[in-house]
Length: 178
Image 1 (cartoon, helix red, strand yellow):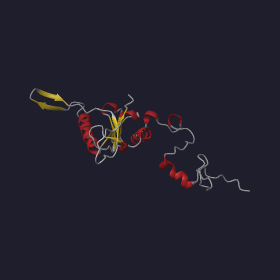
Image 2: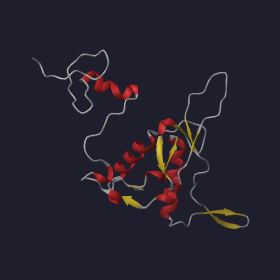
Image 3: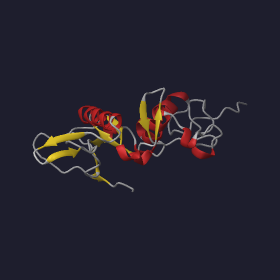
Image 4: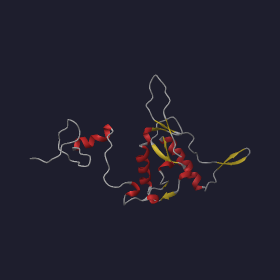
């Protein structure tokens, strides 16, 4: 008599390979594509023994953002109407510099906004100039020099949808939790 468990997916019938969700290998690999949220095994986040908290690196900080909000491609750029491609750090949220990556970061996932490649590169260039001059970047005007301030989030995050060829519709807005 066999004691092998059968996959929990209806009409599958294959033996279980992954005991925690009770799925065979093909069903386990297909689960994210059909929206099935698999249970986690063991502690995660601040409960995990390897949690770095504020000491997280550049890659880890971006991983936190993706886990919280999903990929940036799900949203519209916060600066222009294009599809976002990158999570961009809001300048006022930069708390420390990661020398290995050569980038500023924030351990708080709420400090990032979705931006397209062009807007992210432009913002990064302005931020680097701003930080290199210790906030003393000025533009000459007829009335005298005026300080340039790095751009901030001007509008709420918007989910990206492919444009319909005949009907223009407003994209749903993402509520900024702060």
